[in-house]
Each structure stands twice: as C-alpha cells, then as structure tokens.
Image (tube, rainbow over all chains, first blue to last red; front, side):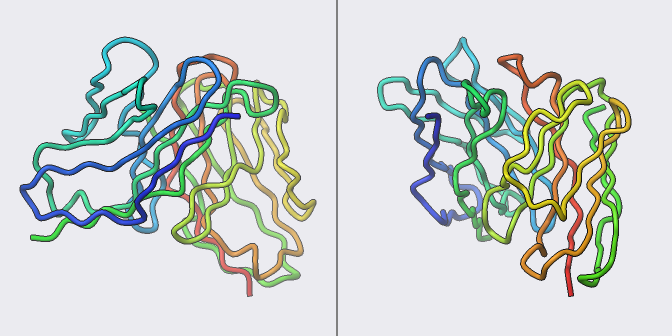
Length: 116
Length: 115
C-alpha cells in the first residue's frame, strides 16, 4: 500500500534561514509525490510534484523538493524562509491500485513556524 | 485558471436541518472529490466522482449525500448531522482520476458547525 510519513509535527525556523520539511514514502512501483500547503482556515494549495525526471523539483513560492530514491525521501526545502511561509505542510502520494487509484494519500502534516 | 470555488464559506446548522454545500470548477477537470478535514489533521477522502459518476464512497454515513449535476459542479447534501460532523469540508478536482500525473486542486473549504 502507498503511504507517506512526516516525522516532524512542527518545524521552527528563523526568518532568512533555510528550511526543510521532511517526508518519506513507501510505495509499490514508481512514486508520484506531491507537496501541499494549508494556511489557517483555508484549503490546500498545490506547491509541487514529482512524477519522473530531475530529482530536484521546483515549485511555487520559491519552494523545491528533492526526490531521493535510495532514501525513499521527498523533503521540501526553501533557501530562505519567510514569516509568511508559516503554515501546515502536507506531503502526499498518489494511490495506484484498486479503490485508491488516483486518490491522494496524505501524511499527517507538519506545522512550519518561521519567526522574525 | 486553477480555481475551485466553494459556497458557503461558513455554515452553522442544527441536527434537524437540511443544507447543501456547493463546489464549482471551470478547468475542464473530470474528477471531483469531497474531503472532510478535522483541525490539524490531514484531509480524509469521502467521495470521488469520475466523469460525473460516483466512483468511490469511503463508507460515509448516509446523512451525507453527494451529487454531481454536471462536469463543473459538485454538491454535498447534508441531513440530520451530528456535532462530530463539524469540520472543514474541502472540494477538489483533477484532470482525471485514472491518469498518472495529475495533481488535485482544492477549494477554500466550507467550515461547518453542527449545533
């Protein structure tokens, strides 16, 4: 079964410092991986995806993610954090089989807090 | 245009009320989804429509009734809800449920409170 894990409930970063939000995956076959961000009382906004190709994927708002097959990871990164990046971040994998095919399977979420 | 709209933004209803949530997208997407999200938790899939047909019902109680009148619209009819049904209800769409590469786009959600 496809699954993702986000090992950190919360990540705290100072503004201007680089940030990393971790995600590991467990899949059968090739993974289709996604990152979403959710601001308070809002829907999820799509940031980026990995399907095939370059292991470094660039997305919205200066975010990028590195796909690492050997470590089964897909960590979200940004070189310089902004206070406005403070939000809840979800990693997701696309279901591939049976009733889950095409559906998103989410991690539990990581709260990012960027302090001035 | 990658916008999914949802109305209303907020809804307060009693346990005996009947209400409906609405979702609309004009991206030509053929798969649409309803999710339920509790505070600080990931969204939980409720229903999936693919080409206007219900393809997945994740064992959702019958007090939630989805409807897809056409390829752009998705409704969720609510009746006799319980206080534990209070949550953020999110609608999403994607190009196709069977394709391998298409992300889902989410609406802003309806914050539902059942009193």
